Length: 161
Image (cartoon, rainbow, N blue to C red; front, top):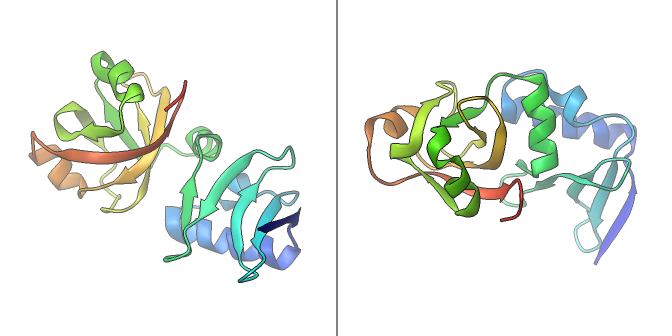
């Protein structure tokens, strides 16, 4: 069971610290505005989800690492404010990727070199249209080197999935 309420200023500050650490850029004010709501666990009292003022989920908080798992809505915010965190895939396979659960290394055209395995990434096509959000499985070097295997595990895609 959860409690949904407006975030306190201390919670907003803490969530912004997490965002700036995780995404290694000053994006926290865009991702975590002052007027957010939080979903609190009744058992632990910890924040589990960050919601916009309209009630749309921006991100969930992973209990094991206390980092963000972005929703597609949260990813669209980051997509607008930063040119980083991207995995670019070939436009020919974009529709197939949106229907699937993974991005394979052979479909990746480029990847942000500052990323690390396990980071949250924005999957975009060659025209920089946001397709999906997911977690990078390999390092950027490995993604570009290998021609086989999963590069990104997708969590949420536009148009379904």
